[in-house]
Length: 427
Image (cartoon, rainbow, N blue to C red):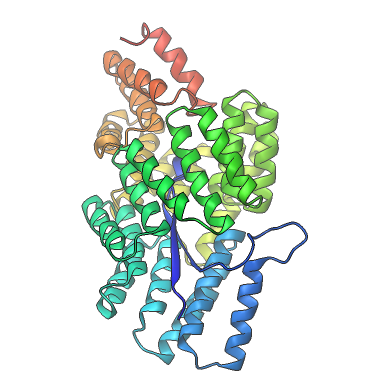
């Protein structure tokens, strides 16, 4: 059976969830090459034909499941999830307990945000083969999202020890980023880039480097990395999203809106649609923003209908539609499932919107406790402190947010600058 390559999609905006992608090794040009066939569709078709010829090939069914899962990620079509699951389970009926199928089921569980289920499948795969690097990758992704930082680090180190390379370096980079070690995270991502041969993988690494640069306010570096990603793979929606964020931060709102229109047409995920809606509102296009919010709600319903669970997206949607109490309920339910910093931040912000700042403060502090003190986390903490009347603490956090990344949000950034000025500026 061909090895499975697993990549972690890094956090995006306030809806960040590290998802897992499983894909067979690529042997052709990047998806979406103008004038050429879609290589992913070709791989699926070949796997299907292979199984028509050899329906008893358990490894072939696992490979098909991985390809379906990759197709779901690329097309943002969660209807592929049941197909991936059926293929993996068919593999298990042909060879009970085979690690390849268990890894696919674990990656599928991560994609559906069933992180406890992903952990279970990964551990089952490791009982079959304790040196399965892909299983450690699935486990690392699951533990990261469940808030088990030390366990995730251990799993990443196992993956590095067994099979160092792009997938392991990418996870290690994200692990360091979550702990606030951004320079080391960038160095490891550049190692991942050195190992990337396929244009899609090159684009993936460049996007992560762009995100790291953007997170520290380096627009020049971010712009360069996103451009390199799009040069490697013009179909990269993540790179297009990165370019849109740089354009918005640089004051090119029309350019940012054009990019978001393009990327949401190609990959209409709830987080991208809500980001687009935010920029449309900033441009004074409230009716168009409402349309995008409605589309985000429909996309979330489709994700849920196909076995997914994403209470963070539900919380963000509730805030976007002016229902802070529903946002609190959704975020609190997610916090019971997993104690990830993004969940703590989302719950804090929902509580703030509901006027429950005393309760929100503890969660906002937990969001930054692990060391990943992002500008967005700092801004939320500052707004909560300001609402509680702690002006000195709020001034410190507003200054921290703007020092970390003065371009962190075209909507919240100006608010932070005005609030800091009103508080007497940084000290």
